[in-house]
Length: 178
Image (cartoon, rainbow, N blue to C red; front, top):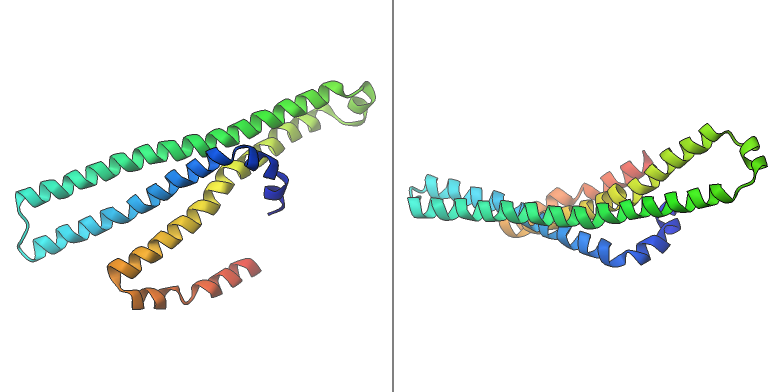
């Protein structure tokens, strides 16, 4: 969490981009819930001998529209989140090059240029990944987890869902310990 606090200046600066990215990520998570429900309806209709061509075309059309929506929303969240993380990388690299340009000759005698280049490449890439994949993983795990639990409560069985989530606090404690 320390790195997120150190980068808070950037997250505040790019708040709109990250919020839009998380918004589109949420839409993708919601759309991910719908196809299994549609497929379940198709199977139920076939099993109950109520499937006809019109229903099948409607279900297929819905799946295609959802697929297109997922594609578009994924494009947008990737543009906003990855675009912001690339901007952070560019900003840090620019600051680092400017800093290196102001350093005197003794600095470069004290530190090897290869080490400085390795830090500039590897460390900045790691920070960029925190601002990209780190935010994505954090937001996606919460959004997908919550939307899945809600969908299970409404579409499957709320009692079964409550029983299924009982081990989650134990898993959180064990993963924190590990």
